[in-house]
Length: 196
Ligand SMILES: C[S@@+](CC[C@H](N)C(=O)[O-])C[C@H]1O[C@@H](n2cnc3c(N)ncnc32)[C@H](O)[C@@H]1O
Image (tube, rainbow, N blue to C red; front, top):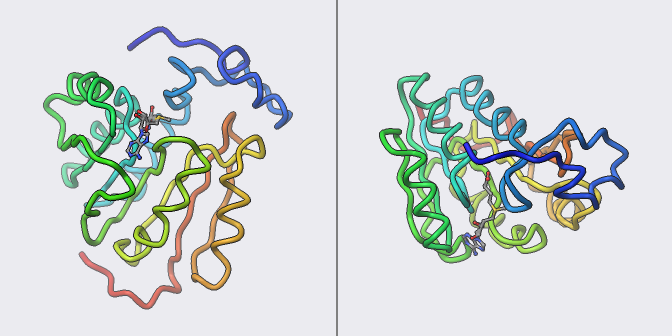
C-alpha cells in the first residue's frame, strides 16, 4: 500500500466540516480516505451484493477492498471503470486474482450492467457525477445501494443530490467522514422486483 498522509494535509479545505481531519488518511487527493475504503468493504460484507460497480477506480484502493469483501462473501463480482489508462494499470495490479473486471471507460457513456446491487460513484470531479444518476436509477436492483463519495459541504454534490432526489423514492443518509459519504437506497419502497 502506498504511504498515507493525514487528510488535514491532503484536503485542508475539508476543515470547513469541523471534523478531526487528522483521523482520516489518504494516498493523495484522488484516492479515497483509507478508512472510508475499508468502510465500503465492510458494507459489501454486510449487504451481500451480487453485481457491484465502481465509477472511477483510480489506483484501485476501494476496488481492492470491495474485491476482498466479495472474496470473503464467496459470491459477487465488481465491474470497475476509469477513464485513465495509467491509473487503471495500477488498479489491475492491485486487484489481481480478485473477482474484479477493470475497464477503460467513461462513466457518462459506459453501458451500465443490469440489476446492480451496489454502486460506488467516485469518477471525475464531484460536481460532474450527478449526470450519471438518471441512468443509474434505471439499472439498480430493488435492494440496490448507491454510495456517493464527496458529499461533504465543501463540494456541490450533496446540494445537487438534494435537488434531484425528491419524488424518486430514493432516500440518502450523509455520513460525517472527511470528504463526506452519501448512502442512497430505495428499500423497501421500490416497485422493482427483487432479483435473487
Ligand atoms: C477520486 S478518483 C477515484 C478514487 C477511487 N474510487 C478510490 O476509491 O480511491 C477519480 C477517478 O475518476 C477518473 N475519471 C475522471 N473522469 C472520469 C469519467 N468521466 N469516467 C470514468 N472515470 C473518470 C479519474 O481518472 C480518477 O482516477
